[in-house]
Length: 292
Image (cartoon, rainbow, N blue to C red; front, side, top):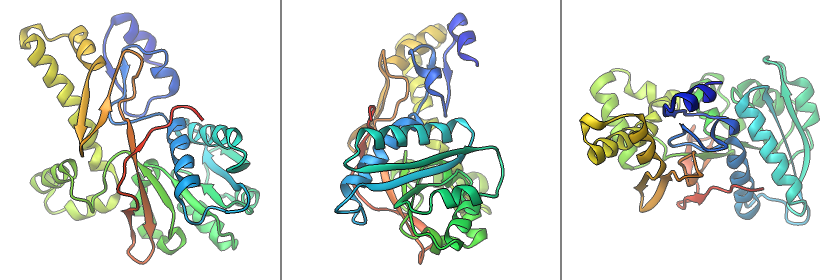
C-alpha cells in the first residue's frame, strides 16, 4: 500500500516482510535480511527432495499445507504448490488450505492426513496437536515465521510431536557461535540481563539484529560515500542498490538494480524433541531458488 507513495516521493522504504508486489518491479522498497515466501518454499522443497533421508525412494512425496489467509502463508503455499507441480517426479501436491483466523483445524487435518510432508500455519501449536492426536505422521516443514512463537511450543509441550521437523532460516540460531548471534546476546545482556534467557527462548524476535546490522551498514556506507551533510534519500537509494554484506565467508546479503530482497542463502535446521530446540542439520548455506 505504501509503495506508490514512496515511489512518488522517491523515499527509500525498508520493509522486513514484503509482498512480491512491493519489490517487483524494483523501486524504492528494499527488504534487508529477507526473501519472498515463494522463494523460501522453492528452496526448502528442493533441499528436502535432495537431502532428507526420509524422502520416499520409490515415489513422489505427498505434500500439502494449511495457513491462515495472510500474505506469508499465501506465498508459502503458492510457492510450494508451484514447485511440486514443476517437479512431479519429486512431489505430488495434495492440498493447500488458506482459512480465516481460527484454531480448529479439523477439516484441514483430515485433508492432509495422507501427506508425507505438511506445511503448518505460523501459530502451529493447535494444528500440530490436532494432527498428531488424529494419528497422522507427516513430517512438518516450517520457516522463520513459526519460530516467532517458539514459546508456545514450550507451553504446549509439543516438542515430541515436532521431532524431526525441518525449519528453513534466514540466519543462525541462538545455539550457534556467530558474530551476529553473539552481538544479539551481548545486547540482550546489556539491556535485559534479567530476561535474556527467556527472551532467547521466546524465539526469533531479538535476532532482528541481523536485519538491523544490514540496514545500519547501508546507512553508514552512504554517509561515508557522500558525507553527512549530503545524506538524503537518493544517496541512500544509490548505495542500497549496490550494497553487499559478507558473513561466514559468503555474500549473505546483496541488492542490485533488479534485486530488492537482500538474502542470497538460507540455512536448514531440525527440531529435536528430546532436546526441546532446533539445531543446524547441515553446515552449508543453501542458495535461494528464484524459480520453481
